[in-house]
Length: 164
Image (cartoon, rainbow, N blue to C red):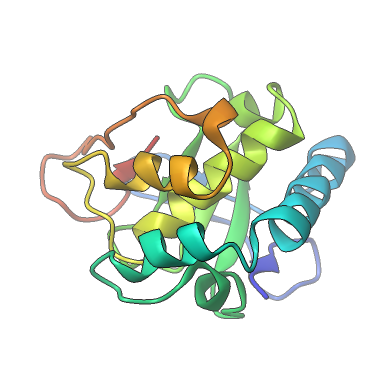
């Protein structure tokens, strides 16, 4: 199962060169919402054939269930709301996802959708297409679908390139 970066987890806090935070969940309310969102993914999304099929078609070639079970993926916290995104993944195929307070302000279902979107980037979904957001339609999370296409702040395709 994906891991939550909590104090004492050993993962620690990291701030990217672009200033995006991949920090431990010290906000108890955000942590509780994240756990409820992960419950939604485990209970409602895991095992969905259309969702697994969409994920399998991404460049990483893994199903949603395989990505969700990957204990090398970390879910981090971005406590600010001024980022202009709900979630971020450090590069295509990266294993560090950060969810911003902006997503938490919209509730557990929005956080669940943001996680699916970011896990699609972990599985190779490009930042230059809508493929990551399209997985929400396959995974029963139409409520969080915006048709978002990731942005690349640095223009390099490198660090912090997957934002939604």
